[in-house]
Amino acid sequence: GHSASVMSVAFSRDGYHIVSGAQDKLIKIWHAETGGEVCNPRGHSRAVWAIGFSPDGTRAVSGSADNLVKIWDTATGAEVWSTMSGFHAGKDTCLCTMQTDEYGDQQIVRNPMCTLTGHVGGVNA
Image (cartoon, rainbow, N blue to C red; front, side):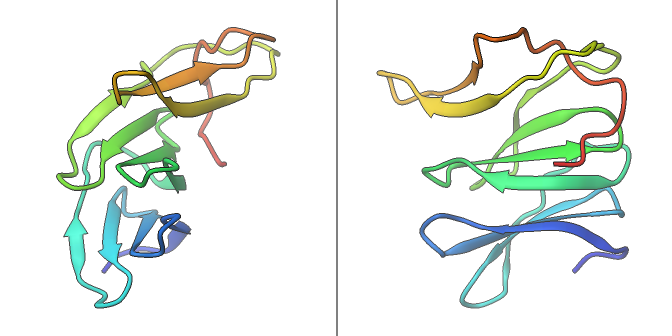
């Protein structure tokens, strides 16, 4: 399990997996029925505050006190995308979703109301 407080947890849409993020900087993906760990994505340098699954369950997304949003492969735990540290979002309100394109690849879709440029503080949800 985690060695510090769990800050966020989510079920996959199909109910087979659970993802958790904690103050120990770790993300864990669990098999919901057995409780066994599927993988342990690593890469945040501070507490993980927010976590979720893509609609098809093949990706997990995490937000952390290290000011990063990362996307992970849920089968291997490999990092597949990350915002860059030190970006500044200003006062814009952004809404981003993950969608599958015509080739089956996951894409971050940015709301046309603003440009996603990053975070200067921790990502809570």
